[in-house]
Image 1 (tube, one colour):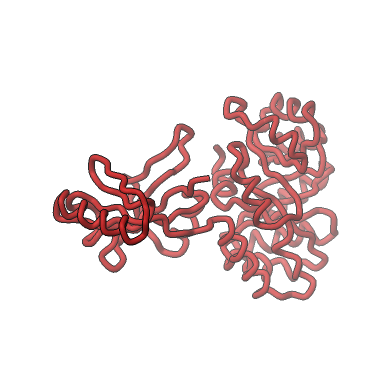
Image 2 (tube, one colour; image 1 turned 120 degrees about the vertical axis):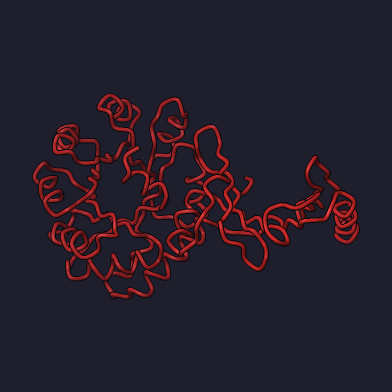
Length: 314
């Protein structure tokens, strides 16, 4: 997968917006990046689009900036000359798509019908946008090797429902940039942070306690089961007291044990936490059949506890 698509997938969100004044572009991009979303799709519905892209590309190199609503070959040239790193079309226009691809552009066309989806596949396009749930559902098959960016103006619940689908790369929308006109950059940054929090949905899944040996693990687990009326669940290496506590039958990671932190998407959580300074133990990574991370440990202990991320159960 192209590294730009990898970044889009890691972020999970593609903020889209129109700029009436290119002087607002850089403060907006910086506000979104500070909120955990260093990505911007600038709509070509206004005359300020190309200059806005140029300013973001020049002054905010950490931001993946692209052009949206590109519907002519001339606009493709303008977007690429300004430093646009991807092109999104408002509809499926083969002439514009072919032209942009001939220029080496990463193209994300809007697809509204099954016929357009098939055309896109025949053209070698692996990622498309769509506001049509039926089109996305019809392609929710890993054998098709096709990914989607659903678009719409929705809340966190619907966003996460879309992102839970196997073939959805990210979600596109403009709700986190509505305060452009008032130039409330701190408000936009806060809304981006809120969106990222909803996207990741961190929660404590269980606490693991390192016990001296199996007898101590059994004693502690039974105590938790009695106090909190949860089932006693033994396995070869540990005993769970429901889903609350894992009593490990001997030394394990962490001086005292470990804490399991659940999240909706481990790979997206890893991206955000690495940006905040976390370092992960790559050797601890466990993945599913498609290579998505299911579990991974941080290198550093906190308070004598190892920490690992784990994918939340549906």
